[in-house]
Image (tube, rainbow, N blue to C red; front, side):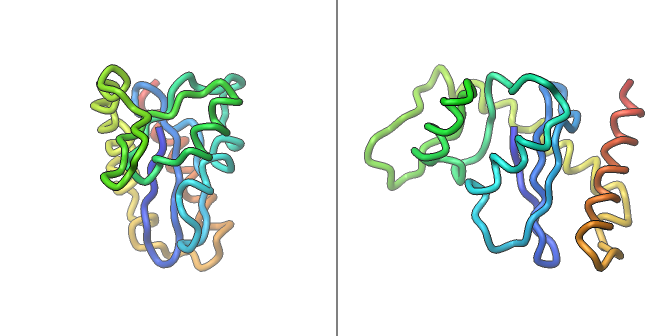
Length: 143
């Protein structure tokens, strides 16, 4: 599952497992689209195997992303945009879209860390370090 959060010109991309625990975290400037950041975030994964499914919102509805992830053996589940001519998702796969709340919960857990909400760190490396520390604390709390 993937999600972004914007703040002070930075996007936080995260992938969570089926329990909503962080598996990969990546930051990037706010200008590139989320579709272009999925591969970079997936490269940061702690797990040796790629997940079977990634769930994202309508922003992740892209033929190029679908093809790239399919080559890696990952199925992208995202609702089709309204202006899409060729529908690629059916109702069976979109039933899994209901589980997207788990990545939202991960970002809610990250909001409990004041240092991430206000972003005291000026440099991106320090901010990424604080995000990784918060993810480690979340993982330790849920062991």
